[in-house]
Length: 491
Image (cartoon, rainbow, N blue to C red; front, side, top):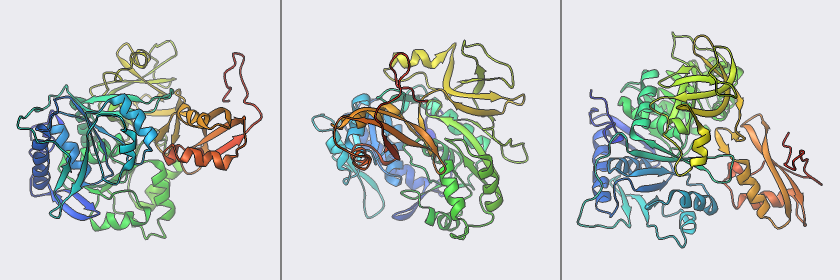
């Protein structure tokens, strides 16, 4: 089989009669032939919609066939795909739309937040739907006689993802076809995925973990993806059995939920070929319990948006898996540097840096961030860790001030800005606090200048932020501790 060089070629040579997508709502099995035909048809419509090669189109859709067809049609048309969280509130979408300046937006009819977020902005919204035959279509698409976008090249930008930063605005990460494919092929190879494998997708496809780690890697192997609209712990094992899934990948929070419910849900003692964990550190005790209860090796991995997801992973048996590590490099080079940028020997603690074919070239329109993100051609992850003599990486912390709630990264300043919008709040400080379920939860300390309470402030945040960003605890204080230069002392 010829190795693809762009996402447009990802499943071009796969046996067309085998299942590619299995959906649960509505229930359907879509073969590679049928998927390719739908993608080609929509690509033809997109090429006559007045767009130009390299234009950006935002997808604001839940998991399902509509997302998948739209994603590949845009990629084949040489357009940049920007997947976004359909649960975002208008204010959150507005910030991202202002940053990316999309040429069009694909969304469901029921998503009123997109309309509100684009008020006053001359950007078309194309509504996705599925007809009685199961074919995906877009309404509102103009039909021009000329055909414009063309086939992409490996160096063209394929994906535009956003990652929260330590400032109010998220950073935009452009990933080329070569970046994404490098990661996809590394994942498929590392886990020895074949056409016999079926991945049950439990993570949102607007994240690199779900998109690259679960979906695209499976397509690269000729396997099938089982795609419910959202994760449901009570339905998980029923779907796993019914559709003959062989593996799944998730954040530790989901693993813990499945583990806690296993007996009540009648989970099997064995079944998965392997279980993958990524996006947050998996506690060794949880990993051991997962292996014992579900009879499958648990492979902890390390990935980030800037590297098109996977960087490192523990291997399949019989190769050695090391507890408390995220494994070894799966395509990139990994090194450890000190605070002066000097590379350190094995078993030394420092900052994790990376370089390789799946690492982004730089953040979009953000020269300041790029200046600090790279050093001598290496990408600075902001994570601290240790590489042992076998190349296995142990992560020990984060330099960046992000809150990691079950794999969702939250910028404290974004939550602080919302709290400060409240007329009764004078000061606000947000940081992560330990949480047994999600690893970290959002904690806020506020100083008031008017009449309100913690419950009212939580309701205020819920109207303006996605649920996972809303502070779990809001503490009202007479003053915030400050350091010598007047900055809030988070410690």
